[in-house]
Length: 156
Image (tube, helix red, strand yellow):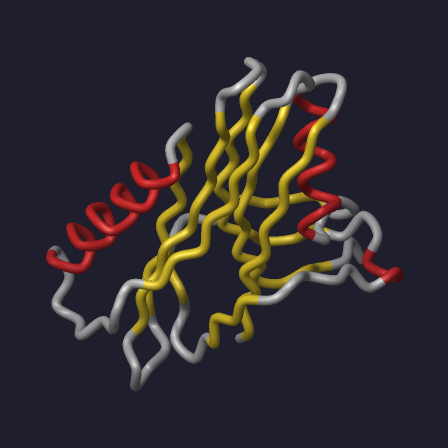
């Protein structure tokens, strides 16, 4: 399985409008998002890339792990981040999704959380990888998001 890490930021007239703009920027706006917990199945390859929605998948279900942060006050920052680690031989692994108003804090929390999760499991995980997205509120509501896209599924 291929899992794509994509990010986006956006502004809008409302917090929901900002979230939609961030989804558009990440390439996943025209799906019905289904959140997953944070386990990476065996055989998975995680890649960083901008996600491009195939036109025929408009309205499909999309399975994701998502971090989302929104701010409405001028000068505040929104940060969303994903962290992950995988076993080299099997591809099994773990995701964490965290949000906040400070990049360093979000990154630190990702490492602390994954470190704890790894310590509680008897597997040999690799190094921790991260992907963060951030935006500062300039007047309109702003949203940052980071998404791990697993797979899409139609409704038939």
